Image 1 (cartoon, rainbow, N blue to C red):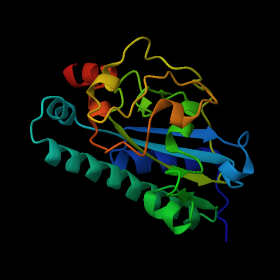
Image 2: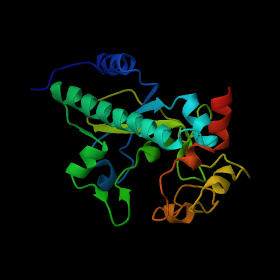
Image 3: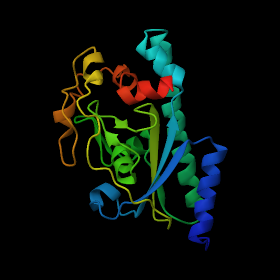
Length: 227
């Protein structure tokens, strides 16, 4: 049975959840403008963001305990996924519909295409719609404050929430090609992202070895780690 609850109270519940679990940024986006295939009939997306520690970026850029640092980074990625699962469950307890877009969630629902290595609604698309950042030449979400040094996951829901309206629709990398230069397998093409551009024009995901060099080597990530 759905609990009758005001938009403001639900917003407070989500905010308290974020503070309790040390979520660095939380954004709510209206996704009704997307296709039904993408939004799956839901009206809102809640984006959870955790920031990678500065020392991770420094170590990745200076070849210190790189394998271990990558491992720790993925631990944070997994934690963000778990938080999305937990938030979806909280929303469902209030009687609203919600699905977590964690790796476990999209795998369970068959929403990840292994052949094309793509999901139906990537977190970074939600992030650009929220104004959090843009898609860098490394095909990662890049923010002004943290560069690409973030972990994201999202929850789709029909629960009414206050939304942000500040979509970013252009690349802000300029002529910087640091991520292109640090890629050990030359999987990054150096193409600037814009709305509608194919992912394959930006990066060869089949060649990528997920070493996170392009994440740490992003100019904005470096500025964050040194600030």
